[in-house]
Image (tube, rainbow, N blue to C red; front, side, top):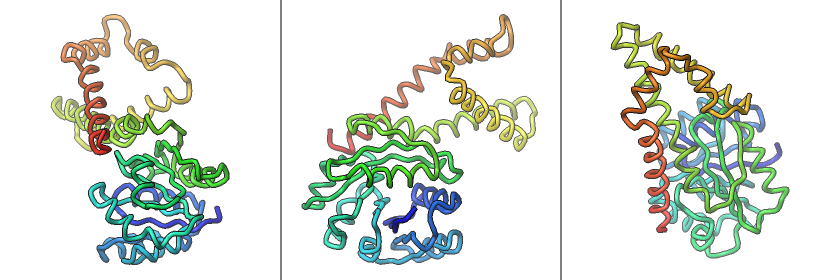
Length: 269
């Protein structure tokens, strides 16, 4: 991959993406530059991945062919105002911000800018991200393929209509946290029955990983796979019954609904 990639901000998601890029060997660490206002964070990321670092956002903007904005939503437009004169017409600006539309980013730059709006998630750090992308009309097919290749280096990608990005934020960006909560709850149930916690976490995590792989690799409906595990009068259907009595699926659906609403609220919709 021949491109200079810049990251403004190195929080959890940016860190995961940088780790995924470097570990995949898709690009040289010296073709990645990261800025952050906290020198300690930069020292840590340089020590771990040997990427270029700076406290100067404008320096990253000048360096990057692909500029990834990974800053907190409430500081997004302030950073854009700082760097908007430091990018050129060929720079591809990649947004990771929840609830920030392509139109709002274009308005913030106040000039023609190539923009790709994305939503990756934290499993990028182990090369298993699920990312969704869309772009404005200034991004060429070749440029979009470059961005897709960047994201494919640390996971799977889907191209979606921008109107669906708020849902993506909930089901892809936020869902790992919901899965972690589920894993913790399953393990707690085992601990309640006297099972060692470290072994419980390992067994539950592997079960979740394996179950997800079956869905992806067989293409079977999750309901069909659930039925295949639930034998008549068995332990699994008893556990399912217990969850369904408490409205398990309804609560999960509501969680996604609330996450989507929050993303829309951030966008001012």
